[in-house]
Length: 309
Image (cartoon, rainbow, N blue to C red; front, side):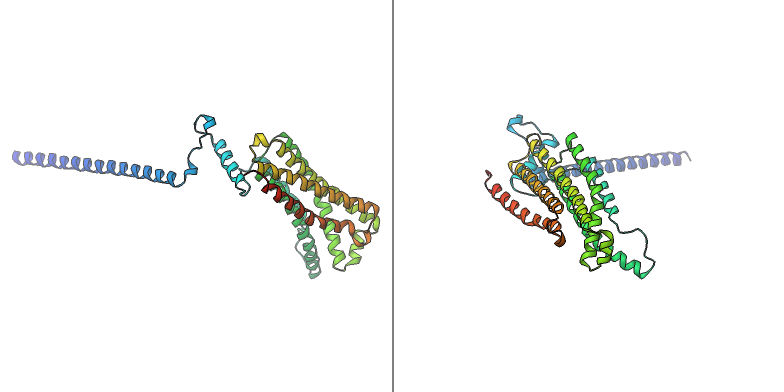
């Protein structure tokens, strides 16, 4: 019996030794696998840096060869992209832009014809007619939003001056949607042959003069504020680190916005003088924006080619 007990203890000790040896083997294998994985990760990171050197920290002789900050790396990359004539630099969306997008969304909502579901076929036809005017108004609002968005994508300048100018711009946009929608509805009624409806909306030359004056004042105010925003960006070109091409683009945008203001003021003047009011000349004058933009763009292309490489 004693012999049997001693043999059992020897077998148990051997089993425990085998388990300990197995644990050591498993632990050693895990350590080897861990080191192999770490070595593979280091190699892949090294290969990625070699394949894409632009991701390495930017160093400058003027900075004593030190590693630059994230902002400095982005500025250097943006400057190189601007010199190559690439697309406008991409920037994080600021709170001011988010707020502005919300105001533009509200403005688009104000353009909606009606929130009620048509109850009769006549209501449906009236809604479809109003939808054409809504489409024209929405297209104009979208052009203003594109100009606003392009400014912040290009420069990303947010200071007190821009906050003030942007707030004034949003205020004018909220006002502008009303004459914009009313003018679109009136024009759709006139050119679709519904003269009775058009006369009910705007009766007499005096009201047409007033409508074109209000619309032109809103149009001029919007692009005057955009011109001031671009002018401020051009004045801050050194602190923003703008390239010569970007500075030129800012000047071009300023001149284009002032041209649009000039067209609106000309329309107001023609309306007040009642020049060609019967044929809609104060309204058709806005068609000159296309040729004027093309002419200024051609000039800008020649100025860009004259910039030093």
